[in-house]
Amino acid sequence: MNKSDHILEGARSIRPELQTLLGSDADAVDRQLAELLAQVPSRMRLLLPLLLLLFLSRTCFADSPVRPRDEAAIQQVIQAYENAWNRHDAHEFSLIFAPNAEFVNVRGIAYPGGRVGIERAHRPLFATMFKNSHVMTDQVRIRAVRPDVATVDVYWRMTGSTDRAGRPRGLVRGLRNMVLTREGRIWGIAVFHNMEIAAPAGKGTPSEKSVGRSIAIVNGERIRS
Image (cartoon, rainbow, N blue to C red; front, side, top):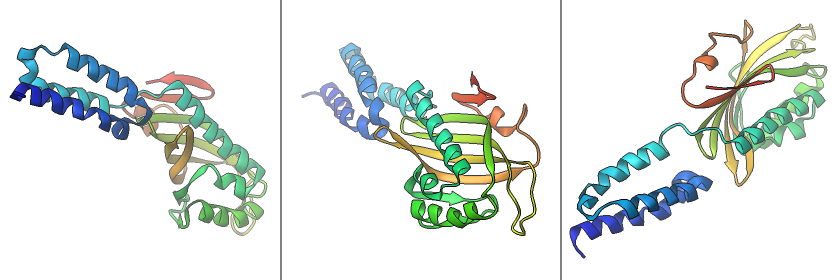
């Protein structure tokens, strides 16, 4: 086996690793890589490492588009969050989070214990200051990091809550920053940071200036950037 054949064999050897790098999208990328290997003339095979580097850098590290089925599944998670919150059901609420999820509330306090800790922390809140609360979604930004990871920003508003002394708070607005991950076909919240904001989300907000391929849902309208 000469040097060129060694290079070609090495290129073929990385194909099994695509599943680890790209999850369920590996098959499509593998087909592209196979076509590339088949088309490389023998005189160009010495340049194959550079070609592969360019190919994989564009495939593995560029922003991925939000696939329609993933967008729909993530929207279902957002809706499940809203439904569980508005039913004030701590157990149902916890189920949309990954078992080892990180949760930080609007005061910057982390709830330890993953899904179990999230349920434990919200049970007394839903019985007191949030027992009559109602959450609504104003704007959603979904950005694919890789096929099984997405960042999601949700601008929200809430009515019916009280402070710890029981005084009505009126309309409250906020922003949820989340990282969602997919296990098989199931999406769940792995990282959750919440905050209150003084003004409604609108043009010029950081989420609307975010870069890369993403999907925004603004007042029910689907916008791709």
